[in-house]
Length: 97
Length: 271
Image 1 (cartoon, each protein chain N blue to C red):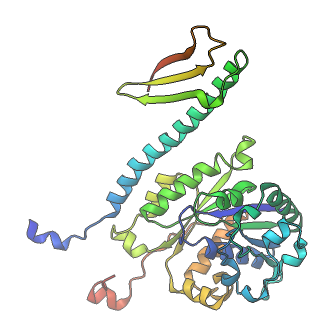
Image 2: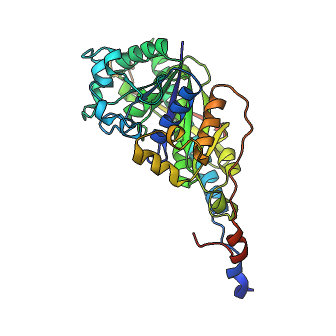
Image 3: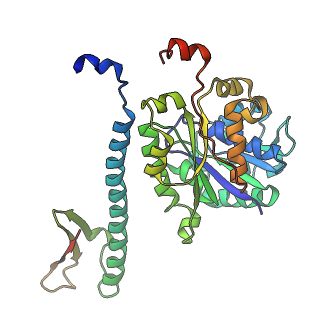
């Protein structure tokens, strides 16, 4: 059969199409995820700032994508004079992905 | 009030400037008042494609900074008297364009013309986001090729988030213009076909411009292809696209391979 392969044109377009579909699905998710993180960060900052004055740079929001579910981790650093035990307020939220 | 259209793509070299000139001239031939605006600061080329490179006195940055009044910077086309060009400046200082300044110029242009067509620079930096910032609708120029399609997808994302219209919560109308399409190669499976690109990007099709020698000839001569090569296949495709942009219902003709008598007998010529 290999002998006759040269008769069939090699079509590369289906490969291009499939690669693009996989890549763009991933990239769209990454872009929407990074904008979700930015929104969460802004809103958490607004809520916490109503009660404690904090440095906007000291908030960390990240999403860990796992199999079946993802974990959202939020870390807010609060100055010592406010939180007597000084330190970091942490929250973890797990959600279905 | 006129309509502001941004011609954009993300990737460079796909035909934004050619398409801006061709669509602008096509709309002007239909009797509309049109201005084409070059946003590619530092690398202006719309003046060259329009054949007006020796008539540039003032440019977009001069108008934004108040050095020149808008009518002083507008260049009227010598062939179509309802077609105007607002050139970009050759200075490398891109920061000379401010958002407020552009907003003012676009507002002024909108009140003078039916169509304000903005030729975006390549990339996703400031120049590109400023060109799309105040648009009502977008024409996305894409080649049937992986990197161009990927970049168009990024640009679609920006149009839906970074424009004034998107920030007001309105939907930005987007039109896909596929250029440099080679029907023969697509039929042989060597090039993404129209359906593939439409499914991947999922925005409505404005037109398909076939790959043609006439396009280079037109830019050599410094005339939009819808003026100097009116009978050519790409000119027809651009005229139809312009009519669709203006709201006319025109049947979409996907270019097909022309198979000549000798080709039929002796087989296909190698690409």
